[in-house]
Picture 1: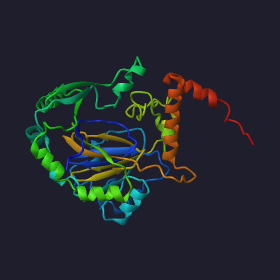
Picture 2: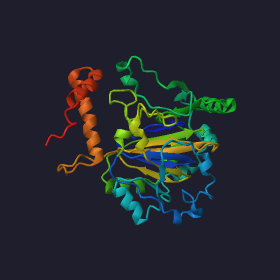
Picture 3: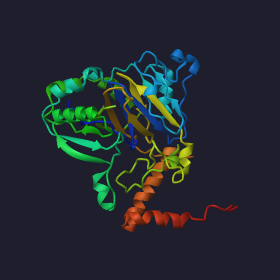
Picture 4: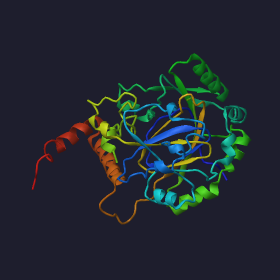
Length: 360
């Protein structure tokens, strides 16, 4: 069995791709998402939460809510359930997020800390990104030529894993805002122990989920290492922009004059601990961060393509289907016009004033 691609990342923040995603935590991190779907995430009953805290187990998991960054929008907890719990099945079938607590999906990797990886990851060259703050905004280098004034918020360089570790430690000692992450697809230079661990994942369970739920193929696995249906509210970049699939809003300091609908955003969040699996449905946005003063966060992602388009379309369309239509229209117009910068003005001309009136 040949393992799917695996890459290493550090403290990355991005939106969800057009794919299902399972985020599996090896060491603690915080994940939040804002839905573009019409469904509502089931809220945990505060009366049944341990200690009455917002997150069940808050007092026995080695962290507390003082380690969360504060944001301007409200958040609700994502349910934490056993994978055998019928409620977990219901949430996944309804395309709603849930934390599964006992799948043993990446059990062999629970020992993956920095020291273990440094000893066994191999001596290949890795792509390392640096940013001046804790935010890494993904960008597509292939699209940069379309936006001459675009300046990435992070810089990429090549280095060995040991050099990455040294840089991470140096960044911590300096105490500034700079952060780094490492991303690289596994290749033949990776040590045998990492490959053996990877092959020891609970592929039986995850492959059954893929077949049962008609997911597409597994496209990639991402290992993230960190230092510490509201589409109209999130103001995503145009599809031709290098930062496509991400919000233009600075969550730390939102500009409500420029992005007024962001005031209506509601987030859903969870702290994923060792062995936890967070299911993120297709077309949901997500944001991952390390807990403040929480040490290193290590996470493995499993990305699956969406299910094939059904032969029979059911109406009314679901929210994520409408998002897909909007994205396809943008792409089609960009190709037809020959210049993606003309898409916005054309769309404004098409709708400006035409649908504001009562046309009955």
